[in-house]
Length: 463
Ligand SMILES: C[S@@+](CC[C@H](N)C(=O)[O-])C[C@H]1O[C@@H](n2cnc3c(N)ncnc32)[C@H](O)[C@@H]1O
Image 1 (cartoon, rainbow, N blue to C red):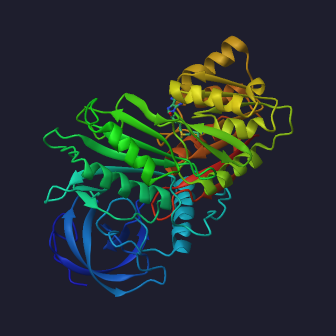
Image 2 (image 1 turned 90 degrees about the vertical axis):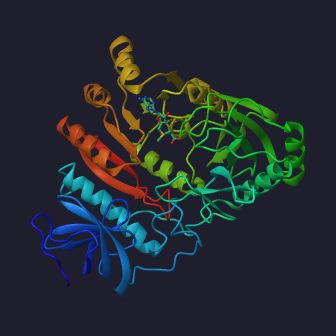
Image 3 (image 1 turned 45 degrees about the vertical axis):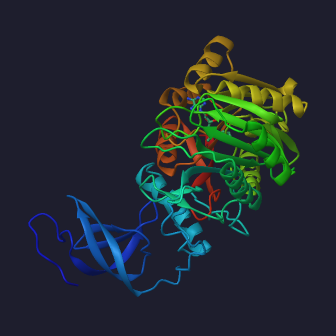
């Protein structure tokens, strides 16, 4: 190993070194150690030796770029996507799927130990997909213009806002993939200008498509910079003619200088306000803006696991906090006496109520709008609600501490925690363990193959 001495760090910017990767970061980059100093290098895999150029050094760690692989890991595979190394959407295509599942399992295990202090909890192997491609039921694609002025639709290049034009995204379901191209061509035909982020001008910002897997209904959402959608009638007619499975065409206006895709207002410009999908035997109406899991077959696996961990006998009262459009709530309501769901987005709660009606479950469910950390303590204090089972499925930041404390005070026999972030999951489990709960089982479920996202479902019981 060639190494330049430094007073601060064992390597300096622009050094070229040879090192072996020992581990992976939670983002999936390789970690090579030089005299104990960690260098993070994209696409390095544990066990591989590589020639690395040092790009940046900080006090405790640095960043590098792989110049040449000297020894390759058997976990390495050729990324099938032609723009994988440009696009920021996937991070693990260079890893075999088996290695991806092991990586996600290890991440959960490490978080349990390091953050949760849970040395001995059983973390089961990740449940993966038989075919880990073409699973996404929703595409949100930014629109730009090529040098010749034609529209392009693709993904942002890593760490930039430069759009990479793409013909296909192999983690998208075929219908979404096709729909993005067709809508782009139709918009081009009518000379609709792409939104220019830097100048905050132009029209079409994003093409969003959502497919209901079980019914094959397709929703197209055109997001524009402001309320005008030029050639609206022609666009609708052409989209309908090109794609007979489109059941909803929506228009969302977003005139803010922001990375957030949607603006406040969404109008149905043709067809239905909802597409309908089934998870198991339960039917869900999905509106343009509501949260709905993006991997339909693995969603069933995840919810079945949550139901198994809840172990309902039919007479239980259950709380489902962070309930979205009531997906887990209705799954649980099949086997419980009553399910109380709480969710902060009013439209999602309307969808949850509608979904309960659709499945004739309105008598066994109650949905409330608000922050779980406000509503649940109120249910407890004002109504004396004490559930037998408490289910949570929070966003990445995890559960609010007030909610965790209220859960502990309510003394449910079981808690089922569904999480998309192992770090906040482990932090919250520690609090629940200190509050009298024991973590019994931890099950990673791969909802997002080819990416570094990790989903986990956990069963806790009262000691
Ligand atoms: C990971 S999603 C889970 C949704 C649902 N369980 C599902 O599987 O479709 C998290 C949900 O929590 C909601 N949310 C975020 N912060 C919240 C809060 N403080 N109180 C209640 N809901 C919240 C979000 O709007 C989102 O619908």
